[in-house]
Amino acid sequence: MNQKFSDSYIKAFVNSIQAGYLTVDQLDSDKAYDTFKKSYEDATGQAWSKEKFISRSGGWRFYGTQDGYITVREQASGMLKLTGVAGKPFGIMAGAKALMKESVPVWGMVSKDIADLAMKLGFKSADPQLVKQNISKIPSSVFGGAKVKDVNPDGGVVFEYADIGVVTKYLVGNDQYFSLLQSQGQGNAIQ
Image (cartoon, rainbow, N blue to C red; front, side, top):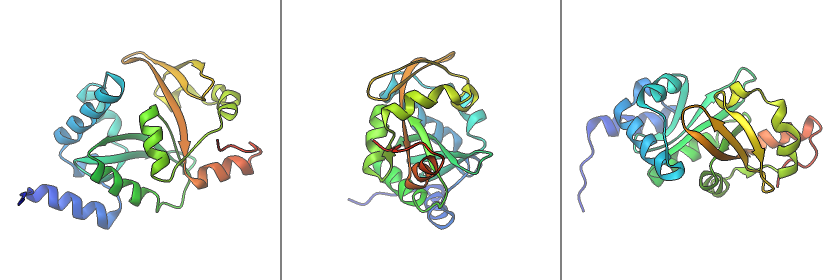
């Protein structure tokens, strides 16, 4: 089968391989949002508005392609916080490969299906007891202003967002993240 790719798609893909990541300004924002919206509606039943996506994603790094990506934002601590996974597996896999080359702690609170995918891509999940003991120490601003409603026995944190309602997310991170937690006295942080 002979499939044609647009020049912008090829350019974005080549740039993502060379630079490791793209910013929202380097992507087709309509396509990036459509990819996000479809993935998040499929996973959670809801998604942000396009305006909120564009506003929030201004400081994100997009690893992968326009058709599939992993997004992170750099925190003041230097850690990278996962902000999303969306789209086709090829792009997500390319993004994961590039992201795993980063030599800084990477962490995120993600839906169960994304947590399962992250584990297959080399991330680890947090021990539920660690989550229960520490979730209240993290400011709600880190989670987009969401209110923590509960922590499930499996470590899933039930958040309530003003705009999208109640969702459950799981803590995942790379080796550097969990090594950092352990060096700070968190014991066996990995499930």
